[in-house]
Image 1 (cartoon, helix red, strand yellow):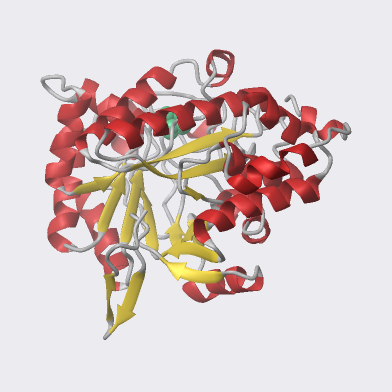
Image 2: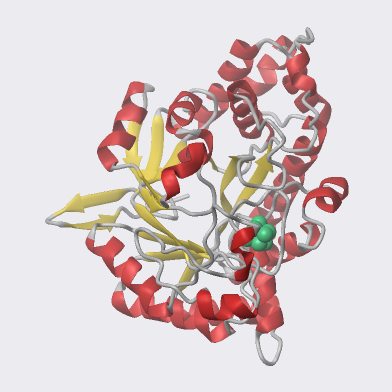
Length: 415
Ligand code: SF4
């Protein structure tokens, strides 16, 4: 792991104050200087200036529900602690209900992954989760999973259609770029990215999450997720979505084997893509989510993972480098609620949502459950104590108004 910024080198970043104050764009070398500087207070103040220029003291959250429909995956990314290999015995043992407490699958891979359970949910189970979330006031259902080898493309369109019919107002944010590329290959006959996106949108899909980006760098790709499609395909999916008018998010998985220079190049590639989407396409990135790597349970479990200061610096530098994506989110599942709260004064304006169930990563072992929930009161308390105004938003960052036992979004408050 290359962490050049923890050497406490004395790098003067005070000279950037005027440009930060005026909203000027920072260069790659200036990003390196921000990482190398030990003047963390100035860095935090810079990021807060950029954040307040865009959002004042508002801090966003949403009422949502995550659904991870299956952890069976044809790939084995080294940083992933979620996937289960799929083989013939998985086909029988893996078809298990994914309730609040998942039963342990007796799949062939269990011995190699003692703490994991292979599962997949039926379409009806996913829809039931959405119905439950909708009844609880969720405005968004966030759906991602592994690259399942045998489920047909109709499973995904049926899932969206079923949710749309049962929960007409809920926003379906689903499927990373990697899953969508997988769908183009499993569809019979094979489909283009545009055809897959159009079919899913016709079935109810609202927008795309930003997962699967990892770090846009050939070295990091070859060492940690060699068999997964790389940056060209990730950007192709998001470019196509933006051309079709489908909004998306973007991510960066940091704190494993990448250098700070590789993080900065990743951020600049997203910034360049956003410039093009804002200028020429119908949609763009809504939010950038730097995801703090959690080593536990992955093939990279020998790595220490990011420190708190590394988290904060990366969130702040993300806000400063990527001036054209409106929102920077600290996902409390990854950065922890306490650090997500602190980051609200370090460039971050969003701490995601109520989540409820999340199976991709679990901090501190997770106690064998996928239940990871934070209520609106708890989210609001974190935000208020950080000196910010809690604003419930929908997926497209429109203010949500709760009244008469229901909810509506305010127009002209989005994005
Ligand atoms: S990161 Fe995604 S594609 Fe890679 S192994 Fe995990 S579930 Fe599969």
